[in-house]
Length: 593
Image (cartoon, rainbow, N blue to C red):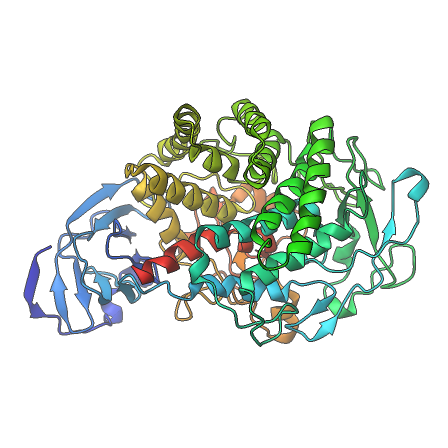
């Protein structure tokens, strides 16, 4: 990169007269910044396509100016007239910078390998806030009477202790589907980068070290709840509460919804079912047990591996439960969906072979049983690519989990034929997303369905792992652009994780009772992210209570709002947040290079 000797007179700011008509022109960057070996790019958005673009500079905090490597015209983001991708990959000197054009300036960002140090711990703050039972963030207890079994033959109406776990999002429902995935994601993040995780909280989530990395404490919180949801062999529960929960919008300790046992006096506990069900007119489309019970098997299996040295007795229990769950899941193929009730919404998971693949290969790691690896390969061949990758749309959580870590484990197999096959599967998914991105200035190829940010995290996770396994860099820009999208290199300039970075434009009005009622920041929470306008306009109860300050950048087909009443784009989710663990742990590990 050519270094210009002159300094810039206006420093970090630009006069308002240079910001374009109504300040609409914008430069979008990753608000945290870029690693030294990243493909570094900013996106310039111009209201007037005839606006000048040639005099663009990257400016450091000493006023030194650097020319971009290149400026590439891209497809415009309606309603903007033109967009450009500004590359400055060759700039590797650590420091603070801005990208400045004749009509707009970016926020300050950093370059360096230390910039993500500690970022991996921030989502754990949100996970502790989401704890059900004893909540250390509020120092209060909630849902102490859970719960009462429903739709379960002879067990109907019986009380069972299933306290614990996490609230799913800003409501207080609890799902095995998302919780088991959150557990596996956190365990995976620790397994892949064990040295980056701190120990500053105890098992209850209160300040104070206990000799266990905090991410393992958090994963164990979920595992112990999962054991309650599997009280004995052959009995597995899938969900606590239902959409009647939405009658209450206060803090969790005050939840007073009456499900038939008195206000706040216990919630329904739904079993895993291989048949469609629901307590009211709305029913799901369940056809088997494998998707849910397979998740029990994989999370218990990885927990058994990682807790073996910390707590051998606990690990042995998990190993035993994993084995039994795998047998039952294998005998009951098909997807087990969550239960709707008064409204038609539920997690519409249709795939299950990915769960069985992950369960089989995880159990192979645990036991060394070669037949389990053969099972994993066979299941993996039934779904070579996670179906959302390259698709334009999907139903809510239709293809879940959003990343198939079973493919990753098989791509590392000692058998080169197996490794090549599943590496190719990973590559195919990335290629489909890149193809869908086309000439998009943000290199964004995920469908803008509900929880699109979760898909973006899944993309980054798969791309990182693929590049590390193969050394193939052809999808590195797709990887870094997706990561940058999460931290502000998107049409709205919005950082999608609450509080990260602390200086960024992150969600200030998320769909959260903690923030809305008490002003408590839900630090670390990943919000749902942009959705198709058709989704936003069709969901019940979604509207805006405040003026939309991102209105100049709202596309007629894709929208995002930092507004409490838009639960479709601005609600943090527990499983999405947990899925950040690998990505941020991997980035934090760069600080120790």
